[in-house]
Length: 229
Picture 1 (cartoon, rainbow, N blue to C red):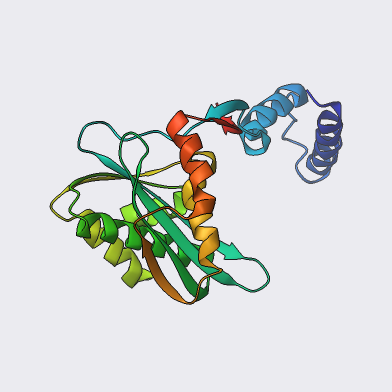
Picture 2: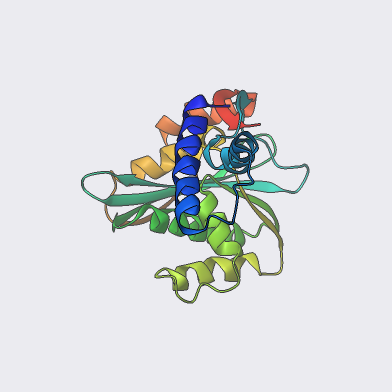
């Protein structure tokens, strides 16, 4: 128990009891300050405590064999300029590159970049004919928005509906949130999108700078991060 809190409660109750003595002398004080302080502490502990975190090592997870593929998506934003980009890639269960894309989206908000990345990734997987697809993004907000039934008041409502329409197509498509440490390949593709001209660019082979990340992912290279226990 914090004695500073107990002292503050003592002062407050002494002032309250003084007022009762003056204005309502027939009502005697019937409270134990120590018990009150303990109950108040227990009631407010969850408001101030932070969840425990532990260090974990996170690596890219391949999709289940034999016919599933994985789509990793990311968006990025360049601080002062407000420029946004998106990137993503399709891989098989051995971590081999199937296809990928980068996009320079002009100026906007990071959530728009993430949603455009998801839309492009879903469209690419569908157009390439894959029907068993795991999609991963490192934005929990995007997953929440797309899973909500009614986003009619959201400024990006049309884009969200476009993503939802692809997810409801006749295929097995799973969308999930991952930590950034499992998404470095897509993160790289999103970042280089800002160096391209405006627009969407698809690639059947990985950019040279992405190859080291692909290699690490295929080997199961794990990166440290503090996660909630």
